[in-house]
Length: 193
Ligand code: FNR
Image 1 (cartoon, rainbow, N blue to C red):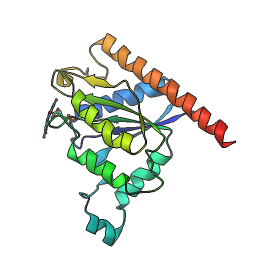
Image 2: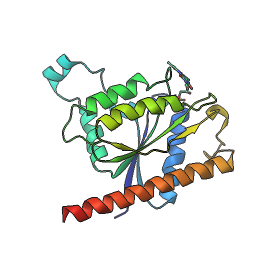
Image 3: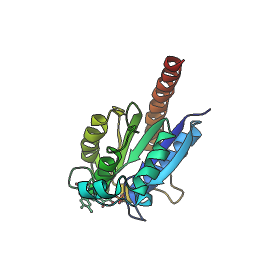
Image 4: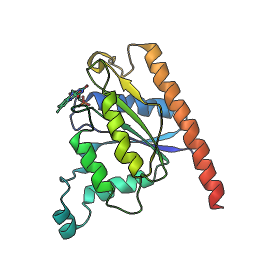
């Protein structure tokens, strides 16, 4: 079967630039021949993590729904905004809830990080911060990241980037990532025999 990649947009906002970037990433992945499962963080409705809430009610339904979908996929792409040079609280909260589940869906799976921001650096500092909890949970975070600068004026009406060369770079980065995921998935299958 083709590889299945989970593409998560880490912004709650309806007009989110990161949702636009996630949609473009999803389309490019499909064009490369893999299956995509698209999601937005807002779908999962998680409360702010509170140990008492967990003791009383266990893992929230939204977290369990997210984990089920993560487990069905071979790899993840996360498109996240940068807030104050770091990971947005909502996304970190989601990772914290997921970390309380077992088996740990991020463990031993490849993740690629992308960001979009109206700024000149495209939210790249936020991705460096996002690597930390994901790697802590055992995810293999792809070394190459893609950050879209001036993202408020980067997209055409049809969802493609105005700059063709930039879109090709994104496609190439995704293709390299998918090649690694494919090799890794095959290796895991061989070891399980
Ligand atoms: C921001 N923004 C921002 N941008 C950036 O490049 N570096 C930063 O440190 C921050 N910090 C920051 C903090 C907070 C609280 C907000 C609300 C925003 C701007 C941010 O990149 C912009 O709002 C994006 O449009 C957010 O991403 P989405 O929602 O469009 O995907």
